[in-house]
Amino acid sequence: MVTQLESSLMPRTAIVADTDPARLSNTSAVLAGAGFSVTEAADHKSLTALLDAHNPSLVVVDRSLAGPQVAAPLLVLIDLADGLDSEGARYMGMADYIAKPVCPQELVHRAETLIRRAAQRNEARESAERLRGRLRSVSAAVRATQDPQLISEHLVNGFGETFGADRVLFATFDDNRVPRITAQWHRANLLPIPDAGGTRTCGLSSGQPALGGR
Image (cartoon, rainbow, N blue to C red):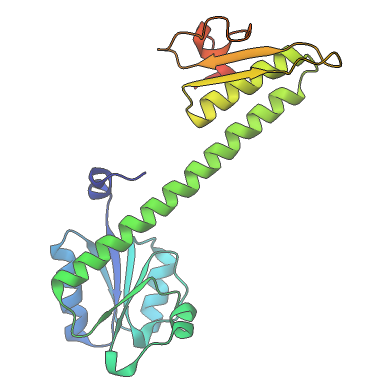
């Protein structure tokens, strides 16, 4: 999760595009005053060129220039009298809009909110990818052996580390068709559960990192 401090330390850049010179200057000045590094565009051609050359934290455009697809959060300046239907908003890829004339405090608030939400979404995607990678490692380790005891140890180690558990216990049910297999994993600062069904302690509890460690 992205903290408030981490968010405040992130470099913030913005592309501002507007065909109205005065409004373009005012919008840019407000964002620059809030700590943004701002680049301006006054028409579609210059906006497209800037989008091709830069990877901004935020794009602020007048509705008249909206259209090019952007990876960054898109904040559109609109006239409320013109209206804005949901289909048009989706077509533009708009993340949010703000009514003209723009209130400086509202502009800064919406800009910072959009950037913070984008950072949180990126962190969530990266976290999900890390989780998938760790689970793939567990799966590969399990497939690499046919020893039931080793398989159980790979499982408890892998799940314990991947999900940040305090403890993971594994035991087969009493059944004459399968061998009795037990294993447990716990955080390094915890003691193993004594005689937890005869479980074998493995992984970080014995000082050995699971699946190559961290």
